[in-house]
Amino acid sequence: MKKIILSLTLCISMGIAGNTFGTKIMLLDQNATDLVYQMPLNQYKKWLCEVELKNKKKVQFVSVKSMMQAYHHQEYFRKHQLLSAPIEALYVQDFISGERVDATKAFYVFGSRIVGPHGDDLIPFSSEQNAKLFMMKNGGTKILPFAKLHKGLIKYLDM
Image (cartoon, rainbow, N blue to C red):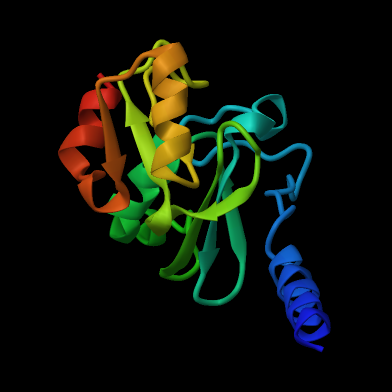
């Protein structure tokens, strides 16, 4: 009886967890361009990032660096009608699996040999372990949590 209950619990848990795994950021508009760098999003799907606004609209960006420009300068983007409401949630894609990840819970590799669509960028991962594995192959200077992605760092990447 214990084995049946344990098996049932495991199956239910996997089913619930299965609803969050396998989600990817899907391109909303094939002709859309990045708000910051004016680059076509459809050419850089591996790097795609997404912002959900408080009015539930979604805005997509060509990379983490681009999305963080909008995040750190929301007033400017709203003033120029590039964002229709304040930002509610940020999402990135795990660079290895392509899975959609809450950007505030992701880990970012800084200084790797991999270059983003607009030069040096931050490479996002769902776990610190994945980031470490990536660094073993592709180099990198640091693994950073979201809280360390400050304006100065983003400005430095954009030089």
